[in-house]
Image: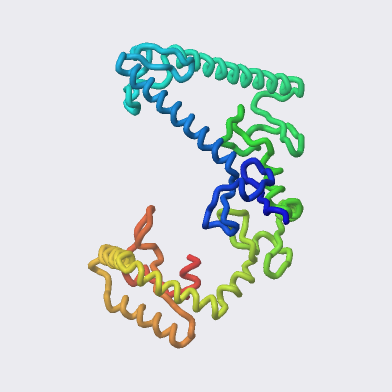
Length: 332
């Protein structure tokens, strides 16, 4: 009958179970390592411990004599040849001054070489630019290949000579927006229409004269024509929205509305002269209210000459008052 075998985890050899130490925690009752490998491991461990203990003794003896061994050149030198270091037991660094200086020289040489390489790269780029006849303040786009001014390139924080991106603004926008070409075509069509004094409404899609559109500060004219904007503003949804917005704005800014009303009241008091007839003024306001009730159209009392103006300020008397509809007063 053949004996049972097992593979050692260290030497990976198949051996009999008699060549393994016992271990009750394992299924087969034997350790994973053979006897020879465990003996070699313990011998190696004892050698390392002896070496470390001898190294500690060596350091201790040298420190008592005011000496230290350099970890780089392995030479024994006095403590004055080392820089101070409060983190070590001896109060000195592990490298001597000469080793540190030689290391720093190598580092400075490598830095100088990198600097020289960067300088040569800059020269190469300038030579390439001169060969391509690229003037100062210009750059070639890496995508479309066209030479454009630096203003047509976005700035970048990367370490580039000109501080600009490699792709021009047009190429960047095209890569971000796939419909950029369609936008340019539609913009060219709009510009042609506007040059001829026409514009297309975005709601009714009809081409109308520019006079049929309200003016806009950000663009030449608004995108909606006057008829479409009026129908939108006069819809019940829009009226309800304006009423809600005005009430919310008045609630949030009560102090501002109180300031405006008091300012208007004081301006009226200043503009009211002593010879003005209060009965006539009251009659005009009563007539305005009567016209609003009879016609169903909102009427307002307006000053012919405004009370607040940088040029001239009017008076609050019956001769300077007129009745207008609300829309006419707003247009004025």
